[in-house]
Length: 295
Image 1 (cartoon, helix red, strand yellow):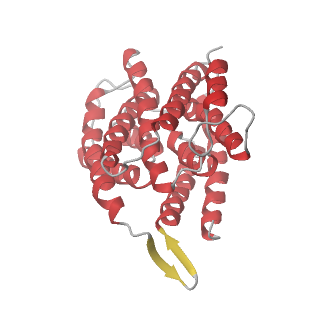
Image 2 (image 1 turned 60 degrees about the vertical axis):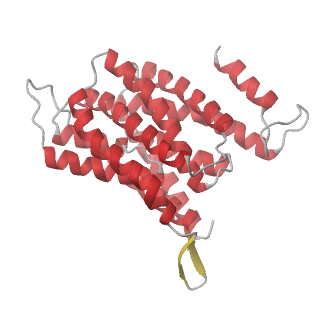
Image 3 (image 1 turned 90 degrees about the vertical axis):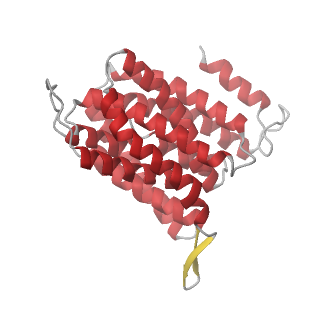
């Protein structure tokens, strides 16, 4: 099995503080990191099954299990989700489940806004944003709190049932709304590292009138483009990127997306999406309360 040697290699070489340890020393933090890499599979599985939810899992895993700084975690999430979505998007394109014109129309404003947000807006946020009495809202608390709100919003989008739109001969585009939503999703992606699939897919279905399956494939390409380009906005600002952690996590996630694609042929997507939505809701509420309590 391809997964076994992969995780054995992590166990043998991975270090908790600077990622390398002896085989006899296996601390609690190392165990949490290993769990994080196992959960990285779920990031890809989520993208492969429902076309969204990858970043909703990635950031909490990086912050709470891998002990990655919040701002760095949002940057890492862009690379991980972007690379994984790219693999899935190419696979969907080869199967004819991608509308390139829609991807370009939606993607251009999204890519521009995510890059500008990562390069200009995020660095402008002060370490201490504001305070209410003795409670100080730091940059980390603000970003994770915003991320929790995004998770809760995403959960309702997943739980709510949507009518399937059948294939039409001619796709009618609502250009203003597609462009506006693309820009909004880009800013959201830039701030919290969320791919925004839970916003992109409904937008493609409602405003571009394309079928759900094609909307999922198209959204993967959009997520890949804007996330990877957004990540480049962080390269000049994050001198010490942990590429080993990043590549291991991404590799596990890529394996997961192929598992998700295989499972999507056997598991009803609507039922799975609703169950995942409830899970995301619980996690979002937990993160929000943990941040309000001062973490």
